[in-house]
Image (cartoon, rainbow, N blue to C red; front, side, top):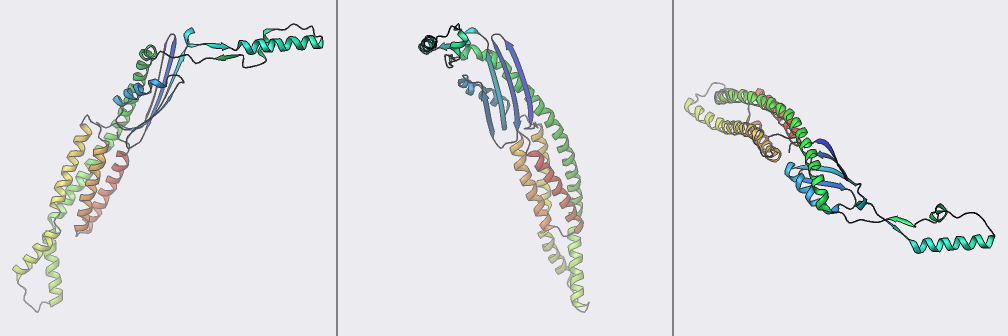
Amino acid sequence: MIKSMTAYARAEIQAMPYTVRVEVRSYNSRHLDVALKLSHGFESLEERIKGVIAETVARGRVDIRVQIHDESEAGIAFDVNLPRARAYHEALTQLNRALGLTGQMTIETVLAAGSLIQAVEVEKDMDAIWPQLEPCLRAAMTDLDAMRRVEGDNMARDFRQRLDAIETMLEEIGGLAAQLPEMVRQRLKERIDALTHGVVEIDQTRIAQEAALLADRSDISEEIVRAESHIQQFRALMEDDTPAGRPLNFLLQEFNREFNTMGSKSGKAAMSHIIVAVKSELEKLREQVQNVE
């Protein structure tokens, strides 16, 4: 099955006292590479989150942001620095007495000292948050996978069209290749006639033998058979349930090898032109395959 490596999804779940938001983007990459940004205090959930991602994504870079807000009283705590507050209050009292001030001292005056009340890190209950986080995470990954499949279907249609075009051109190459032995024999005879000016009688059997040897060197029937097999393998990989990106990339390398060999053996300009057109289609396929999971 063809899946694109490029997609985006987000999900949010509110189940008091937690609010969970997940935002995920995926990009091209040779391997599975997860970059996770997680709310402070929940770092120990990282491996669980990556495990869920790996169930959906086999290859590609995944940038994921997970925000967890704990609105419970247990999740919010502050520490009061009473010694500092008392010392500051005493200092203000002494200052009032020394200067003969009569103004009323308020809590705002004391708090102006700063650093008297600070948030305290509360130990999070990961087993309590995970039942809220997991469905939100899976919802985002499901949407991401759906988007990758839709884009993959579009790519698959393009692949099929290009494979059909390559298959048609391969048939044309096969037809031209069948003419090579006679073409080689005729060229050889014409060259010999040009050199001997028709004065020397040439053994036709000998010409046929030499032509057969030259034609054998130009024979591309094996390359055509392998190229046809590669087309069938390409189509089969597109329909398989396993990730197809890596095997398709390898298969395209084999494709290029076969057509490079055909190009080096071809003795007709028409065949060379077709092979160039095929290689152009293969390059377009290669560019697209780089985005396949």
